[in-house]
Image (cartoon, rainbow, N blue to C red; front, side):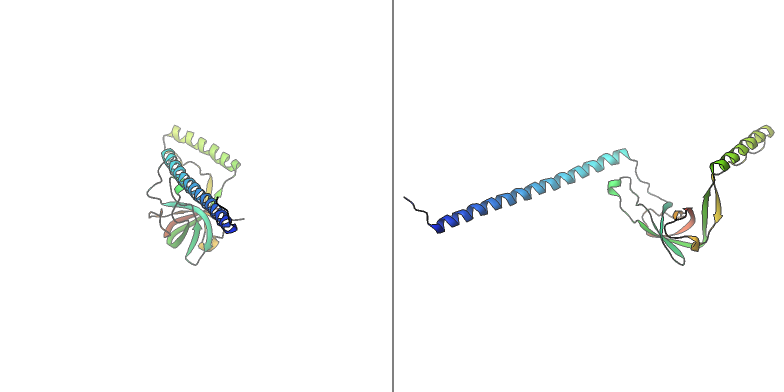
Length: 187
């Protein structure tokens, strides 16, 4: 009959423990790999579903809205959302350098009060009725805001702006603005 020596017992135990550790490690690696592959497949499926529901992002973009991050001597930097029809794939520049040239128009949008808008709307309806009766040109409808001119140094950190350009700005990091409208001054 075979007798176990203490060395044989020790080596057998070490071998069994090593086999168990190896088994647990391989199981964990396989499990995590499966989870990663499953997560990737779920993300791909989610992207496909979103792209079927949301309209395609425009190929050409001539206007951006964002928050002023920095004001320079002849330009400013805004933080704007990247363009993508799928929020799971949002890519592209988020910081844009907006150059202000000699022809760039900078203005402040001053939103009118509800009372002022109502007063102007009533006056517009009366003028429209008179124009129709007289057979003359239709007057212009009132706007819910007024515009005042700005200079670049009027812009400040945190201001909300809408920037218009004559070129496609969808994927560019730097461009010259044709018009800059500050919609809200930072508090």
